[in-house]
Image (cartoon, rainbow, N blue to C red):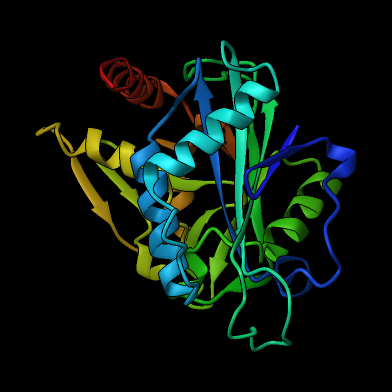
Length: 282
């Protein structure tokens, strides 16, 4: 079952109009959520990121779009898919409705739809299986606020995913126009070198990831670590002791190999233990 503007309909009935602005122009935003036993992980962070993104996109936020209202709609959708006592991956999509060309109609209505599907892991674990990445250099991301939004404009991620599959890689790292590494195709990037942890700053154009922020919060509590949000050169990748990717669904994905360099995952395992401990307190 799919939740379209509060109405639960079957997937076959949830037809999208060709005039929908999310479909025509990518004029839409989304949040990917992990829900375990009807509890949305990091919901407050997701909600405020969505509201901030809607303001940047100049969307008129409906008065009923409170944190409580959207949470109820998400959990209603989870229940309708018989996932209330299970683990669900949920996508909450918000678009500007129909009408207009590049310029939206003045009275455009905000639509939302919610889709839920089963997900296997309730808590975050480290996958020790081999995971190789490469650089995706065909296209670049422009630094700035729009690049950091979780919008429906994901052409680089689509093309990069095709490149990775065609060349036998599990993922790719992407550049901004300043030739700095900003993130992986499906999450934020962290480098570990001794006691120094580094991740690209938001100003470089990386996604303002929810799990990225959780990891930074945990790391900054450790006085023995030096945590930096700073631009990453491709030359730094092979000098790192560890590299890992973060997103709210997987948690932390260690990178095993880049070019001729192989990496461990000991630090990533320590971090994910702390993230899980944090979740148990929520």
